[in-house]
Image 1: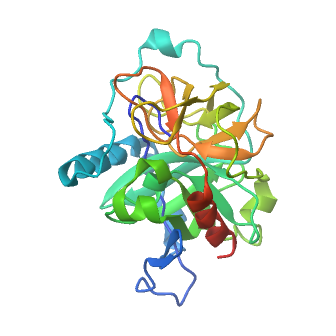
Image 2: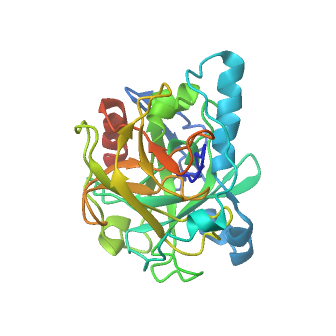
Image 3: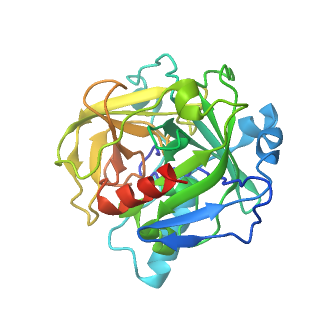
Length: 309
């Protein structure tokens, strides 16, 4: 997610419900998962005009808010700050790559402000699940997002697969209840686009949980904070290292910035491996490293809930 030095991009998630489901069917905890079903599903795609998409803010701003709240209540065990934008020189080595059908941008609204994140279609029992960051579906212990849409294969404004609107969003209890970055993962359950489920329409990545640490990863996302503009897919790769600052997260060398939050981490080289984390945050005192949560049992529980929704 994020890009940055403290990045934690914020992706927004809007969970919309099918007709007849009211907003009162709000957050219901189910073990390690917290679920939000939202009304007015059909309005999300219509809301996102090209102008609103262009002016959506990178989701890392939301993570910054969660860090401030954590400091105030004493629940933050490690220092996370919003970093400065990467230099043009640092970004120069970042390759411009062709879009990948199952990876896309996520747009959402939180407390009246529009945000942008990244996401990836993942295999699921209902064929409808997109993985993203927890801060892209919910502001930690605060509000849920609305107007959540996934735009797969996005490239310079092109939307060859159209937009999928969320009918439900799911995150971990650790993120939903306290904004704990160790559990910063969310899953959006998309409504069919016509009769096409997102997994069938654009493809889907397998998922893996409780894997050994220190694996080789390839990361993807749509960084929108300078010097990037969010219009093209970007990638980083490397071997994960353990966080020594206090979290259970892992880090990979990367220069992606805000807007990449929620983008997938694939095991191995390229985008054909199993997804095993997401872009989450960065430290201001550790330059050019993207950190992502370890996908253990709690995140697996959230995935299982979304897959069955």
